[in-house]
Length: 120
Image (cartoon, rainbow, N blue to C red; front, side, top):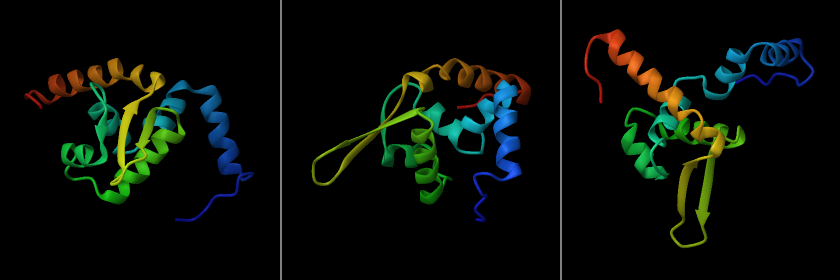
């Protein structure tokens, strides 16, 4: 992947769009294919990496790790590592991430109505 300079016009435009458009702000935080799915999986309780992997079987390990790191950097997910062998790491929604749960539930309800079928 090509790196974009911090002072590039692309980054400047992205920053301006994020400041002026709340939808852009949200999509920068939860956009992409996997982040909203991970948030949805964490909506009820904490999960270990392996539990997330089982809950989202089609995600690759690389994408799960990358998405979790981005969600943690955006303060939507809290990663808690216990100092034991083997490592015991859990992922939990932060207070900011928990505020997204009603939005995720509404998205799921919309999907069920729009598709005309029942979903899990």
